[in-house]
Length: 416
Ligand SMILES: [Zn+2]
Image 1 (cartoon, helix red, strand yellow):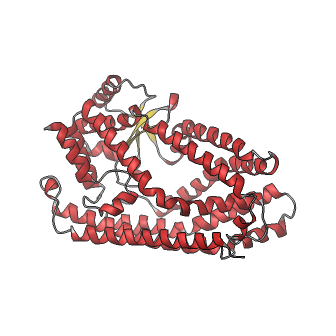
Image 2: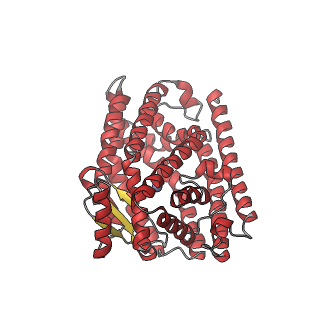
Image 3: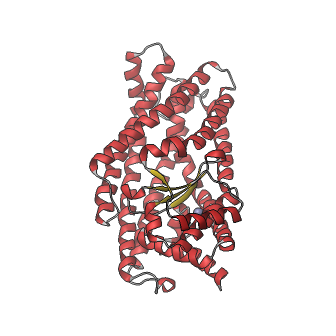
């Protein structure tokens, strides 16, 4: 049954997994090699102790990523050419011989459960061993599991309609089903963007309007100056789960709102908060969010068109360990296997994202004070124990944000 696709897939799976392991090991080695000394640019702002904590935290997280990458690769091989998906399919065929759409949904959900089960021990270890050890974890075990159940329920409630729509279109909408599905998928995503901040995020965190009047006035003045309207300024109880700090600008259209993690407000002074928000506004002003959505629509269009073709190719199923072809199996294989083929595009995506960060920094430097953004970044790097000395190649592959030293030296150029 094995064919050219089987060999290509296995070769790529081995290459991507080996690359992930290699990059992770390089990163740990680089971080540890620079552990003894704080980089000169941060000499006066970051203590040796904080620098070493960041080095050890980064190494511990990377070690975990390496094990998880290996486990995921083995599971994926077992599910596909190992025959796991075919076993799941056989099981449901025994129970539901006819109703193909219902069976398809059950097969896909079962496979998704199996592949997410493997992530649970890693998440658990990250939260209760790694984050705990470095003092970041605020979650209790019951919160961890209730979050998991809530995520699963939300996932099923939101995922079920789109999954049934997909299977129904595949079965009955003719040759161009993938195009109709693309439209449904795009509308669904836009709807999610509108609904997420107001309805879904509050299921996991508390959002309260920002109380601090003087800070509120400053932020509103900045919004006006930058030509923004938002539906309110909110504080999120990020501290309930983790002591990492952040701020974001969320939603679009009428549901746009500014959200600050309470942990961020505690640590930054008003000048710094203003600079961080100016950076977030820079993302909006440069249309980074819209561009990201447009890119996602483009990628899903290509992906669905490709799936429309692949589902009619027998070698596609046979090459990935499936003996009985079906619409749902084509969809499932595509969802599971395409990330392996897309991994090598990561450096391009990451580099695009870093370019956006520079643009947002540039905007912040012009509309607020670059000096305060630098101060804020240094505090966030320190308090989140982010390493100042990432391995350059690892960073090129994974980092959505530019390394601290480059980012800060660019910002420093505005202040001098
Ligand atoms: Zn940014």
